[in-house]
Each structure stands twice: as C-alpha cells, then as structure tokens.
Length: 185
Image (cartoon, rainbow, N blue to C red):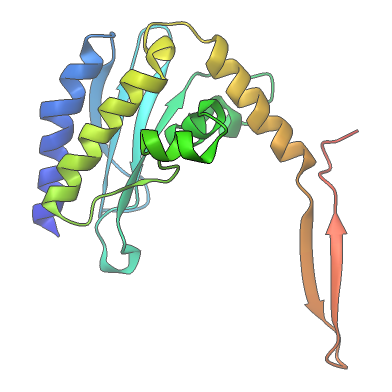
C-alpha cells in the first residue's frame, strides 16, 4: 500500500502539478488532520480558487480506493463551506449531454476515479487532466460563471432534499418520518 501511496504522490507531482501550474495553481502537500494513512493534495491560486484531490487513503478497510477531484472558490452566499466546492464528477454530470447515446460516445463516467493499482493511478490522473481540460477550462482560466451556477444548483438540490428516518416501534412495526430541510422557508 505504501507503493500505491508513493505512486499517487509521484503522479500528482509529475503530471497534474505542471498542468495546473500553467493556470497559476501552486501545489501543496500535507497530511490529513485525522488520519496518517493519506495525504492531502491541494492546488491553490492567488485569487482564492483551489482544487483538492480528495481520497480516503490506502487503508485496507477503505478498499476500493479512489480519488475525487474537487474544485472550490470561497465566498458562496451560504455560510457553510460545503457549498464552496463542486466535485468534478458532479460538474461533468451537470454540463454533459442529456442523451444516453451521447454520454456513451464520450465515454463519460460520473463517479470518483479508481486508484486500486499502479496502472489505475496513472489512468486516474490522466483522466483528471482530460476532464479538467475539457469540462472546466473556464474555471482554470478564472471565469467562474458556470462554477457559480453549478454550486447554486447543488445548493438548491440540498434545499429540496427530504430526509427520511425509519424507526421501529416496540410492537415491531416500522414508522417512517419525513423531514423537510429546515433552511427552506
């Protein structure tokens, strides 16, 4: 697993960091606050924009392993930082063609990138660069119009989401309770 960790770090430093440096993003590597099994890959720009490569590390309990590129810009109108970001898979999902055959022709996947082997690590970093270049070029070039629309959609989806809680009565019957989001007025 140490071998995979070193390969991921090398791939990020050799492939992804030089690509993002062309757009003004500086690479920073740090340890995760709560876990010693994985690193935090962060790319920051002077205007506050950032790209994080999230992954849960290579602990065997977390298998299958993957990375999740996340694009962010602080200052969303909501106080929580949860909506300052847009995961790359979510971004692709919102701007991709609607027709299924078009998505299949483009070989679009709307999931995290698997990193279960050395081969998959290289492929995941290459796919990340390809997706950033083809779907997020405006974000990389400091045009945040689409990014702001996507995080607005993400926030609206959060507001309209209903939470369902199930609980068992002592008689064995299950009772479902539906709660609307408390932020909705």
